[in-house]
Image (cartoon, rainbow, N blue to C red; front, side, top):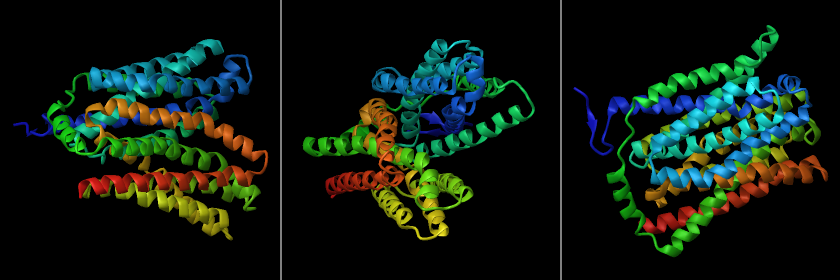
Length: 400
């Protein structure tokens, strides 16, 4: 006899199966994030062009996100979550299946834009579904980060394996596409949750917040969508150069700091997910993690030894990339439970703006010094901490 969760109106067995299917999508998504960069030489040869042109094509993914996030979020609320999960999967399948056969950069750029649109559609359908399956809790959304990290860890190994054995580079595209095709048929047969009762219940709670407070919290969380993404971008792009040029650490140690950041990220996902399973404390958790990131970044800038730089890099990965951005999104969804898709789209739209602007800002700062480029993260972290503290104070005062 199948057990039914009355709050979610979905079979427990279906819930577990759906969660796993959604996580598999983000395992492939993790691969997509790095697949063009990892195959730059092969793609440049295939298109008879330079690596610089391939880099230009990669920017198409960001353009696709910027165009689609506001649209897919709104439509996901008006239509249904499953439709947008399927749209995202289909667009990713097209991107992965056609890209290795693309003979020119025009087609490749169009495919990259489609991948960006697919990313936004997946986010709009997935984050909302995971929150709704767990009665408004964001404990499952944090695990998305773990599957993404697994995907972008395995893909470079696959590319190296193919290159080392002189096999066709397109296999690294076709294999993720095959995974998605199988998962597509799996998801087609799964029923998504009916969330009307949950939405009505949470909407009554959110209505108790005054309009002025809601506006202030909204501004704070939109800013956090930008700053949380900015911190991850600055660290991953500049830590290696900063540690070698400014801290004067060895090349091996400098690269090792990024590996420690990744280890910290995966550890953070597991710890944050465990905490959120035990208690609902998203606001306090986000504040603690942001302040921890701020202290760790200051620690790296003052690190007198390689060991301290390594420890602080591990901490930054744990606190800034362990799912804290997803937790911030969960807080935002609680504020507007009837518009979760729209909120997801807007939140990640601001993250996409960071993806476009931060490289430009830090690139300019690097002309004045590598130290300025990396330490800009301290300013961003300070701003981020101020905003999340403000959000926590308002949310806490409303509960009292």
